[in-house]
Length: 319
Image 1 (tube, rainbow, N blue to C red):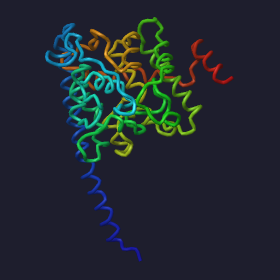
Image 2: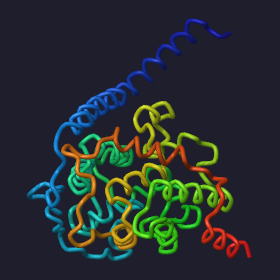
Image 3: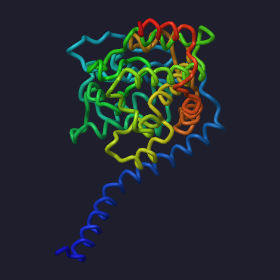
Image 4: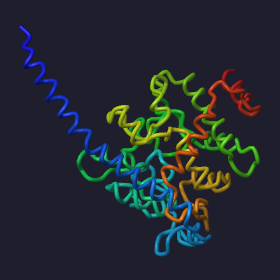
């Protein structure tokens, strides 16, 4: 016979266990966004960093001078689906072999190289904490896990169902993405939203294992592993979608510049003399990035009319 007392005790224990599990994450979320509010407001009043001084003195990339680029050896060096991290490893700012990298190493490296606030850098690299399995470090290839950093409908890589190794970009996709630049020289927010809608529609149609079909939150947020629960996803990574969050950062950090993005995306290196276009005194914050991400996300239309080049591409692939 079911014992009511035992049932209630079991429910209580589960609730206590859940609270203890979520408490550290909730504290992290509150602390992260409280700090970010400070950075965002302070950026409004402080002068922007001067050209040539966006990357701090003493840091790789100051005055556009980056450490030597060495292309990775396929099969022996670890790389991720993220061009931002791969470029840092290819220049030796992160370990060149891409192995045994700590969360703090990644966070500090992207903060200074891309002029991000400490809060945005921490947010973008938080997935490493989930993947390190208690080791305290990860290899870049670990980020190939689906819907951590790697995701379907990527701008530069086929879905993982068709390409198990997401470490390197697909030249055809890079070309198609950059060809969307309406001005010919730089991608606008409209161009990025258009290509994101195009990729989502293509991947839904061709990939029977497309992982975003039934998960709005993964379409919309996509930076934290799903096992933290949808609620935690919402609190921790609000408004950072798969395509829109990535596109927002490329727009802010590179100004959408096609020439610079081609080198960065296709070769995994920084252009000679390059420095971030975002010059905020305390770095580009979560709140600032979210605003740009929202502008992209809410203008994505998977049923949009295709531009002539893409319509021709679609007909060719259907033939």
